[in-house]
Length: 333
Image (cartoon, rainbow, N blue to C red; front, side):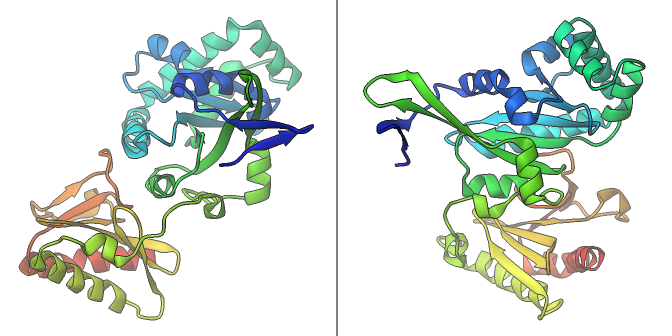
C-alpha cells in the first residue's frame, strides 16, 4: 500500500465513493491540472443544452493552443472498456455530423457569454473579439482525449490503444490523514502540460512506462479453447508472422493477440470457443463486395485495433479472408 508522509504524519489512500466525487474534485482543481488558460465544461452544463444524446464527462478547452479535449473521469475498479471505448465511439460518431459540432460550439459560446470569470480569462488571453470564430476554428479540429483515473492499469493501456484520438492519461489520487479521515487530506495528481512536455505522447498512445499491471502470455489466450480454434489460431499466427519474419512483432494483451509491423499494428486476434474475431486496420468502404463475415465496426465498440472485423470459424473461411489480412499489412507497414 502506498502512503504519504508529511511532517511525521501518515496519510493513507482514500477510496472515492463514485466517479461523481472524483469529477467534483477534478473541476475544483481544473486550472492547476489543465493550466491557467484552460476552460472546463462539466457534462451537467452541456448535456441538457446541447441536445446531444451521448456526452462524455466533460470538455476542456485550451485557449492559447486552440485545442479541445474530450474528458473522461473513471475509477479503475469499474469496467473501463464499457465506460470509455463505447462512450467515446458513440460520441465520435455523433461529432462527424457538422450539425452536432455546431450545437457544441453554440453551447460553449453561450456558457462563456454567461460566465464573467470565463470571459475575463479569455480577455486576459487576448481573445476579446470574434469569440464564435475562435470556437468554430478550435472545435472543427479533431479533439484529443484526457482520461483522469484513480489508478492506471493494464486494461487501461489496452483501452487507449483502441481510441480514435490522441489520448493522455492523468492520475488523480487522494490521501487522508491517518485516524482523522478525509477531512484532512492531500491530493496527488498529474498535470496536462507537464505530462505533454515530459512524455511527448504520440497519437493514440500513452506512456506505457507509467502503466503497471499484469503481463499476459499465449497460455492466457489458448487455455480452455477447442482444438479447432487452436488450429485456426496457429494458422493465422503463422501467416501474420511470415508476412515479414524479421519485422512482424506479436504481443499478448488481455483480450487479444496483436500483430504489428515494427510499431504499426495491422491485425488483432481474439480467441473464442466458437472461432476467432479478427480486427484489421482497413477502411470498410474501400472493400469491394465484402462477404457476410466481414463487418464495419468503426462506430461500434470493440476490443481490437482496426475498423474492419472478421468472424473466422473455419480454415476455409481463413483461406478466403487472408488477402484482407495481407492488405492490412501492406497498408500499415
